[in-house]
Amino acid sequence: MRADFFQGLHEVLKKDDDVVLLTSDTGALVLDDVRKTIASRCINVGIAELNMISVAAGLALCGKTVYVYAIIPFVTLRCFEHYRVDVCATNLNVKAIGVGAGLDYCTLGPTHHAHEDIAVMRTLPGLTILSPSDEVTGKLFAKLSYDIPGPVYVRLERYGQPLVYPNAKEEDFKKGLNVLRKGNGSAVIIATGKMVVTALKAAETLKKQHSIDVSVVDLYRIKPLNTELMIDVINQSKEIFTLEEHSIIGGVGSIISDLLVENRISKPLRKIGLPDDYCRRYGTRDYLHGLIGIDAENVTKIVKNELGK
Amino acid sequence: MKKSKFADLEKKARWVRQTVLEMALCAGAGHVAPAYSCTDILVALYQGGVLRVDPKNPKMKGRDMFILSKGQSCAAQYAILADMGYFPVSELNTYCQKGSKLGGHSESNVVGVEAFTGSLGHGFPIGAGMALAAKMDKKDFVTVVLVGDGELQEGSNWEAAMFASQHKLNNLIVIVDRNKLQAIDFTEEAMGLEPLRGKFEAFGFDVKEVNGHSYDEMIPLFKTFRNRKSSKPLCIIANTTKGKGVSFMENKAIWHFRIPVGDEVEKARKELHGDEYEAKFCKCTKKK
Image 1 (cartoon, helix red, strand yellow):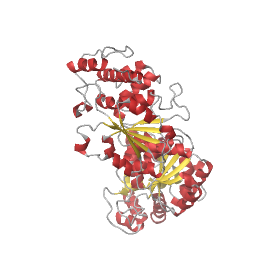
Image 2 (spheres, chains in turn green, blue; image 1 turned 90 degrees about the vertical axis):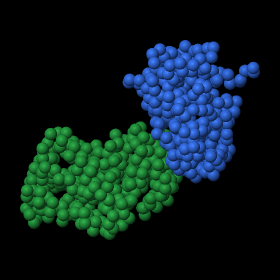
Image 3 (cartoon, each protein chain N blue to C red; image 1 turned 180 degrees about the vertical axis):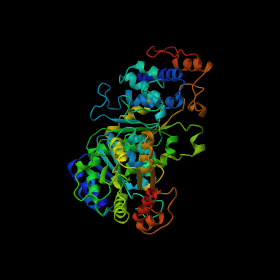
Image 4 (cartoon, rainbow over the protein chains, first blue to last red; image 1 turned 120 degrees about the vertical axis):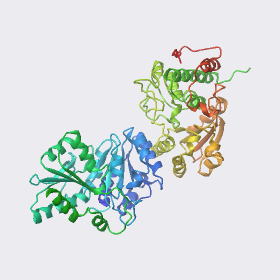
């Protein structure tokens, strides 16, 4: 997905001379091509994220649109206060590109995991948060983030297979969420990022093996939430599940929880995500998902058990 | 006594200090002594023919960029901007009060202010970004950042210093308000900055030192900003006195955030006003 995003960004860079890409020494194979062709506007600022965000703000104050790229904890948490004051408080065209959603960097441990970024970044006024679910949306969201005025945070995966949207276009992503599967009203799984694929797999199994027909929603724009459409979706289901590779504190589950409370909607909500803990185990991402209980098999069990209560 | 050739600037600075005092008294808030420390530097930059700016056209293309990174000194900046005509002088009366745009830190919503500061360690890297933008677009505007000395304890400044040097941002000028005091201690007692010149030189800067209250020293140096031959960014260590102009505030940490009360008010006024008082700003009549 990262490669696809940078392909999309390469197109943006070629079309607009006022677009600049800064990276704090985070690479990608496809980025090498971009750096070769547009060297003067693709700058490795060194391992110095605070400076990167503020330099981006300075460039943006002089009319540039600036993409800042690093692994998620370093482009969000490390430099959060610089993003808050220099970028968001002034509503500048600075787009934070974070790679490594959730446990994507499964072998590198908690320093490189991203399980607090949504909780933290969504407190920033005026920030748009995008969460692509596959390679196609990864590429489309490069252009989409350029078209959205003001600050944007894009939560990327390194990879993005299998495809959720084989034939999608940018105009398919105006509403903030997509209903990918319509069930019979028993429940809806609201997922984001890579977990959309997990939700679709779980929904398939629930249907085939247990005759439970759930809806699946891709919440690709985490902020601003399309509250009207989301309430409409929620009203069509008896029970709600949220599924994210993020802490159950402050992420999509919390966003939906807030929505229910604020709108006096009384429905069961089960938040499925990363526990309130650091993952000090290593291995493949699938292995960790199984260990934690957020793989398709476990999600299927959770939904089945909840609906059977 | 020989009259200084910069007597007009000295007069303006005196008015700024008077005004800052009245603003703080009306508001019951604000950083007076930090503003006094850099008042002369600000007057030299804005009103000494250094910065290429136009109050009638605040967003003029190609204008120089100035960032007050030590945003707590904004009362002096606001007084100067009002005096120059960016906004009415009468607005200064609202400083830090209900509904005012003018708060206790430099606000980019205020006409003439280029960057939103107050959190320390931000202005230097923002300025580096502006200087880089000028290089990218082949424009000749300069970016001047005024940082507090205590502020240099923030690591982000040194990231910015490495960056500015790496990218040969000779259009970036960082002025250090070297009053040797921070909020509650002397800098050398908290986390020492010396040798400050050596640090900046090691980070790839040209370094000059001036008396930050002497227009004779500042103006000729400041007027070289646009025509620098060196490829290095420039650091100016401006040696200053925190609280300059009011004897009992000078060089005392306690005055970082204190506002005069009781007899201190008239004592401060007397020291600042001398024989003249410009009626351009209403004297605070609030009972303390």
